[in-house]
Every structure is written in structure tokens, then in C-alpha cells.
Image (tube, rainbow, N blue to C red; front, side, top):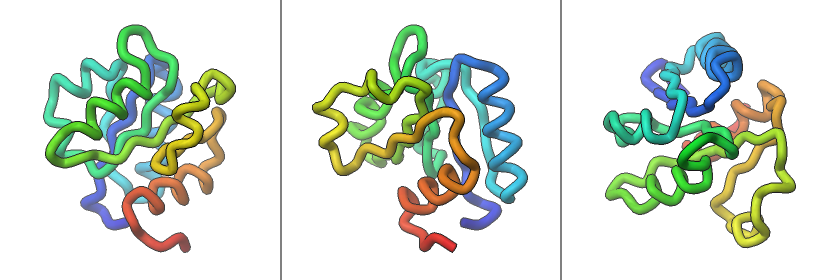
Length: 123
């Protein structure tokens, strides 16, 4: 990843948003935060290289956001982070494209997952 990488963080918990943004910035990765999926979709989500989203949020869930973004011309990869992985329906668990991390996400796991969805080698 380089300094031009830009990640959107979507979480209804302000502490989680700011913590994840700070973590990514400490690795030299650009980050912008959104308190809901609707807030992200109201901007231009295509400008992001990846989205890190909470699963359970008021309104649109992280899985709903992933579905909407996957239907766009430029499918932005989405990493779902949740404190409740058992709430992810089995139909999604069998999806090879689902990137799911459990909260609290370990920084090395998150960075490795971002590198994977961006097609960059781990290292």
C-alpha cells in the first residue's frame, strides 16, 4: 500500500471510527470516517480503495452496504468488522468474497485483510 491508498471506515460508534482511522494513519494509510452506510453512500464511494464497515448499524447494515457497493460499476471491496460474528447469516459465510474480522480487530489482521482485498502481498 502507498500513501495514496484511501480507506472508508463506517461505524456508528465514534470511538471505533476514530481508533481505526488513527490505526490506519499510523501505517501511512489515508482514512475517512462515516457514522452510517447512508453517509458514505451520500458521497462518492468509488474514490475509496476499500471500505471497513461495522456489521450492525442503525439503518443499513454492513452486509447491505457491501451488496450495494458490489452492484456499482466500480465494486469497492468491503471488510466487515463485528463483535457478533455469529450474527452473520450462513449464506454470507459461504461467500468466498466475504472478509470478516471480529472486534476488537488486531491491527496486523486488519492490515493483512486490507492488503488481501487490495491484491497486495502481505509483508
